[in-house]
Image (cartoon, rainbow, N blue to C red; front, top):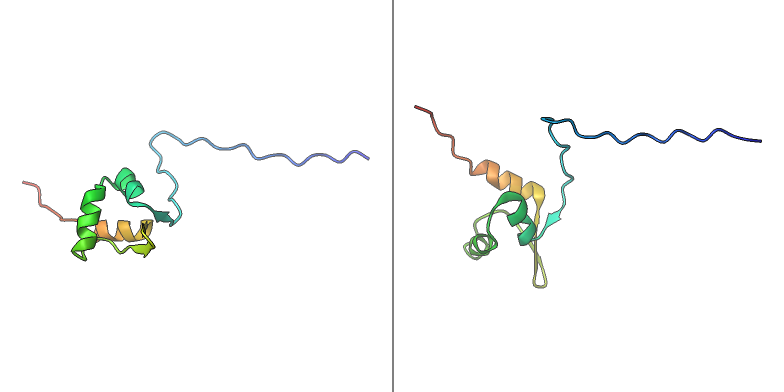
Length: 84
Protein backbone atom coordinates (compact mmCIF):
# COMPACT_ATOMS: atom_id res chain seq x y z
CA UNK A 1 0.00 0.00 0.00
CA UNK A 2 1.30 3.43 -0.93
CA UNK A 3 0.92 6.07 1.75
CA UNK A 4 1.24 9.72 0.78
CA UNK A 5 4.35 11.41 2.11
CA UNK A 6 3.73 14.32 4.48
CA UNK A 7 4.44 17.67 2.91
CA UNK A 8 7.67 19.24 4.11
CA UNK A 9 7.27 22.86 5.15
CA UNK A 10 8.96 25.39 2.91
CA UNK A 11 11.42 27.55 4.85
CA UNK A 12 10.48 31.20 4.80
CA UNK A 13 12.98 33.82 3.80
CA UNK A 14 13.34 37.04 5.80
CA UNK A 15 11.49 39.99 4.36
CA UNK A 16 13.51 43.15 3.77
CA UNK A 17 12.96 45.59 6.62
CA UNK A 18 11.51 42.97 8.96
CA UNK A 19 12.79 42.45 12.48
CA UNK A 20 14.97 39.37 12.85
CA UNK A 21 13.71 36.75 15.30
CA UNK A 22 15.04 37.18 18.85
CA UNK A 23 18.02 35.00 19.68
CA UNK A 24 17.73 32.53 22.48
CA UNK A 25 19.47 33.46 25.70
CA UNK A 26 22.86 31.86 25.49
CA UNK A 27 26.34 32.11 26.94
CA UNK A 28 28.75 34.44 25.14
CA UNK A 29 32.52 34.62 25.37
CA UNK A 30 34.13 38.08 25.62
CA UNK A 31 35.00 37.76 21.92
CA UNK A 32 31.33 37.10 21.05
CA UNK A 33 30.22 40.05 23.22
CA UNK A 34 32.68 42.21 21.29
CA UNK A 35 31.42 40.94 17.94
CA UNK A 36 27.73 41.34 18.75
CA UNK A 37 27.73 44.47 20.93
CA UNK A 38 31.01 46.25 20.04
CA UNK A 39 32.25 46.21 23.65
CA UNK A 40 35.98 45.58 23.40
CA UNK A 41 37.45 42.57 25.21
CA UNK A 42 39.93 44.82 27.06
CA UNK A 43 37.06 47.02 28.28
CA UNK A 44 35.19 43.93 29.50
CA UNK A 45 38.35 42.87 31.38
CA UNK A 46 38.68 46.33 32.94
CA UNK A 47 35.02 46.27 34.01
CA UNK A 48 35.46 42.83 35.60
CA UNK A 49 38.51 44.06 37.53
CA UNK A 50 36.59 47.12 38.75
CA UNK A 51 33.52 44.98 39.54
CA UNK A 52 31.38 47.01 37.15
CA UNK A 53 29.84 45.96 33.88
CA UNK A 54 27.52 43.09 33.07
CA UNK A 55 27.44 40.03 35.36
CA UNK A 56 29.66 37.19 34.23
CA UNK A 57 30.45 33.61 35.14
CA UNK A 58 33.96 32.24 35.49
CA UNK A 59 34.65 28.54 35.34
CA UNK A 60 38.37 27.95 35.62
CA UNK A 61 39.92 30.54 33.34
CA UNK A 62 36.89 30.72 31.05
CA UNK A 63 34.67 33.84 31.20
CA UNK A 64 31.08 33.81 29.93
CA UNK A 65 28.25 36.34 29.84
CA UNK A 66 24.56 35.61 29.42
CA UNK A 67 23.31 37.49 26.37
CA UNK A 68 20.31 38.76 28.38
CA UNK A 69 22.66 40.13 31.08
CA UNK A 70 24.62 42.09 28.48
CA UNK A 71 21.39 43.47 26.98
CA UNK A 72 20.13 44.45 30.45
CA UNK A 73 23.43 46.18 31.27
CA UNK A 74 23.28 48.16 28.03
CA UNK A 75 19.64 49.14 28.69
CA UNK A 76 20.45 50.27 32.25
CA UNK A 77 23.31 52.43 31.02
CA UNK A 78 21.57 54.10 28.11
CA UNK A 79 21.63 57.88 28.38
CA UNK A 80 18.61 59.67 26.99
CA UNK A 81 19.36 63.02 25.43
CA UNK A 82 17.04 65.79 24.37
CA UNK A 83 17.32 67.07 20.84
CA UNK A 84 17.63 70.77 20.17
